[in-house]
Image (cartoon, rainbow, N blue to C red; front, side, top):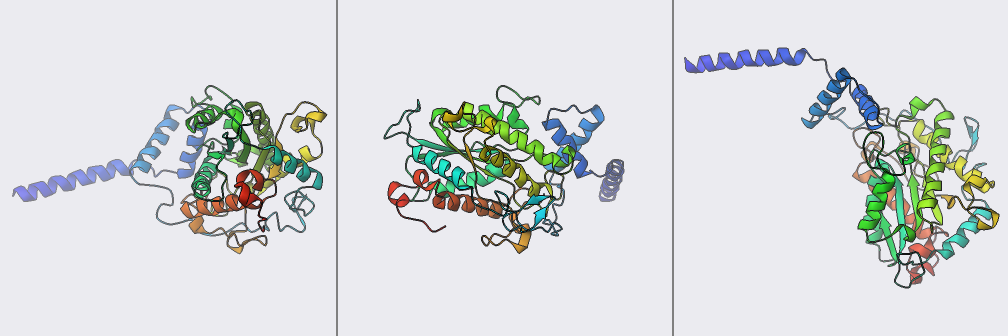
Length: 385
């Protein structure tokens, strides 16, 4: 009798729980993502929106995730990598540096090589010192820090790396290009400025801003679709990148080189965080910025003989985008569903390692990086690119 009563009570409780659960509609994860992004940018949510976001967070904590049952599927976006583009894309020519060229113009390359030769170990005050340090730091968002943290491990484990080189990951999750416009104090959402966080990380690594001489910058804008169609969203990112390199030069007086990369393939994206074609098109933001410096834009001047120095010398770092599983001609890089997390946007462990290896190979082989990245004995030995 007690068993029957107990069963009946459990059954009644189950019915009550089902009724309570069914009264709430299922979470629209895109909506939740949009609310979260607005909140992170400092936007105000009303009581109903905040309750919706809180419920979504609670469900995530309980293990319910968008597309958690399967990896991203499909490969809807097909386009020749910028390095392979022979014709044009929305009136833009191919090649990293435009007009089908993947190498910097001779004048820019010569200036960068000259700057690279000036990179040397510095003491905490920025003065040359035999036992000083050369600091390479990263600036960017979540993808950047995931990839760069893997690079740090690979580079520090490479016997060819210079013993004077200290590598600091300054990129931070959730800090897109817009977040880096806040240079100190608190952002509107209450988070510490990413620049202040970067300075804290340098201090924790035992180095100073005066020792930072090289940057790797990989940035994007959260939900670029909200900024308008191409070229508008790419122009916004370009403006943010300009601010970043200018403020970096102010913050790091001995900064000489900044390598820029655009995003990885996003054809598997399941959210509006940064899908295609925005990921592909972010490469034009990088190109336009570098082109302006090459053409002598005073706001990006790096030559003291021509006036106030406002920027380090800008170059393309490794180009990370490839045409999904079809790849590209410059190497064997392919980007599969195994290279991304469930959102199709952030790199998986495998994807992170691929990018880390690309960056490491670039710095070990590029003529503007070998001299300061490698040990003297290694740098003297030509490396086939």
